[in-house]
Image (cartoon, rainbow, N blue to C red):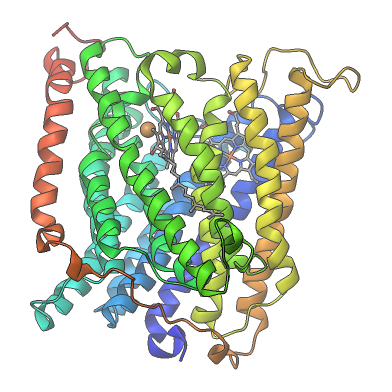
Length: 557
Ligand code: HAS
Ligand code: HEM
Ligand code: CU
């Protein structure tokens, strides 16, 4: 039986969330290609340089916020119901949070894109980081608020399902997928409180004209308090797939369930007290607290390094189960023509590179070299733009047959798609990193460098820009292939093929019984997380507000 037969109402929630996610991905990806072409200096016909920032805001918001969160909501709904083997308690409540998120996302998107239509009084050219001093139309902040409240309610839905299950199973360990969902959501509640305060107490009243000024440094600090953990909100659903689905796709089992739990607990503890690593160049924040953030960031590498070990060990186990031998021979027996597998593994490979550029970002001194250059988009197109995005697409290949009851269509397109994405991203991200080292800024429609000539291109700035444009175009083509496959599967099938999907997930090699029960004590970990945040943020934040909540600047501590 496929998931859609066992959980028809939940399958609908999963389908709708995934569909919205992938539509946002399509539109956002188109904007991305426009940006990549515009920045060559040659292919500028699509938007004017003034409109570039509207498009860039649309790209960031639709991809980094809308696509990721809806994909997470789809995957987590599937994971909770599957692993607890029970439906979400109330379909109406589930539709309510989904609708709230959707209305919020559409409101924000319309406000941004309204900026492209001169006769519309809307605009929100504030980029996806939206801190002051840039100001958007109030509707943008209202849309964001609805969206975030919707995501909170989604978490309530998953927690409620878990509590019902707990009532029937008082002594059992939390199933791994649900454990991952709950820890991720706890981290989300703690961190998104920062952005909620920023929007509700400062940006929205300011945009409505209720207060005259805000402290830009305070809004930036509140944003980055949220802005680092949000990157793990994008990553943890990808890890959720790498830990619980990828081993099976490889032909084996998860190497260690306890290690996976440790990783998610570490993310809950350490994701938030690191936000200052986005503010190394901000004046008004004492160096010592930046240093603490750097140290915490280096500790935060640990869960990802543990993941690299556990996930690769699980894949190796799969390869050996399939008959692979020798030190590297197991690599050859892996199912490279299976799009869900290839997508996850290629995403993992790119993430290894993205992780290394992240370590470079995190060093306080070397950050001064790369900050605000194209190096940074190079970094995050490997992380959120591939580790998360390509994994969500790969999960789509595996899940759409299960949530629609239809066999995957256009298999050949699906098979080449992850490779095309990988090649496109190799061009784009590598060139972005190089361009950043050459000092080319990010977030500009007018990078002040020589315009492209087709002679003498190799080795210079022009070559990097061309590679970005070439990579961006390949990525967009890959995106179109993906959309054809998933929407073709959903809309083009007749629902008779569901039995062709083997959706079972085998037990891990080392199960939860090999770990202490304290790992499942979510209250304890949440309390420790809050203590760490108070230590990292207490003093600098109190100094920022000491001279008045709305006054710019701060006295020295
Ligand atoms: Fe980052 C800026 C530091 C991870 C996203 N980051 C950004 C921005 C975004 C972003 C969007 O310290 C820009 C924000 C803006 O607009 O200004 N980042 C880090 C560090 C990590 C890191 C230390 N970032 C992420 C993830 C993201 C993300 C994850 C999204 C999903 N980042 C920074 C810093 C900045 C920054 C500074 C500020 C820069 C500036 O100056 O503005 C670490 O978490 C990375 C750890 C990762 C690893 C890699 C482990 C490898 C694995 C691969 C396993 C392999 C497999 C394949 C499965 C250590 C897990 C197997 C294959 C076989 C064939 C077997
Ligand atoms: C920024 C291209 C996919 C997230 C950019 C920029 C380019 C670009 C050229 C830099 C613009 C600038 O700094 O002036 C593309 C292309 C894509 C793609 C061609 C694929 C078709 C993605 C995906 C995500 C993503 C899948 C996330 C899931 C972002 C974010 C920014 C960005 C957050 C920063 C926006 C800002 O600075 O405010 N993209 N991108 N992109 N991209 Fe992408
Ligand atoms: Cu960060």
